[in-house]
Length: 359
Image (cartoon, rainbow, N blue to C red):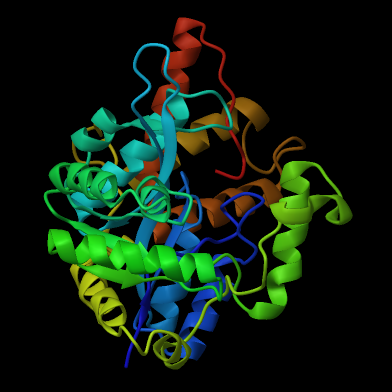
């Protein structure tokens, strides 16, 4: 039996994920996983590294994020804060996921990103939703035995995502999780929707638990000795292979098979994106590389004077030629011209601006 891990945190889940995206990809490949999704907290910062490593390893890489959502909170009532792992099925879905990350960070206090259900509904196309970890909206209701309320909450998500929803279940060796998962499976069957197994991964291997514990201690600003039950009760939140997952779920293999069907739906890959830039209007008969070369020569003359003088030695021109050749090879002349145009406009209007070298 094959298995796709659909809920996994990298180190870009700050002070929560304990593995680099590349390490997770390498381990997933080693385990023979059919696909891996990275679902960092309100974050897509590790997506490029994850997608690049997965492409090189020939591993199916699903781009996702675990989005923080505020539910209710009208009047004097405090909203319920929950997390929903969202997976990009299509390019439109990836765009909507990016927008939700932006909205969550823009409209909430720094360090506490959050979107509303209305914002979620406005940007749900192309996304597939899981119901999340045991502390989430629907699992919490199921754990409390409120199955009717769990069904109603799930129905809300089904409306928002046009039934692109799966109930998420887990087994980290905890009796309470098994009991909650049994109720969640009952909810999924009552609503005729899929349920899936995930490991809610936070580190690559079991031995990495200590790193995660240290990160949790930093997050809570306590020593390890002071953490107590704030730490996870065991070291089960690591990436597991299909055989291990199948043994643990041998009584209910449907949830494993469903991971493959959802992974197949999520066919968007980051390499499908082609960066698009505004078109810089060039003089007739001149290409971008030639025009940039002219501007560079003009700037060099203004700064250092003519070639082979005291201020402008052979080293200057050799370096300029090297830089321009590299820019031409990478096809980036248009980008440099756009930035030059922006800087020219800013200077003309008296707008202070500063470039960043590493960009």
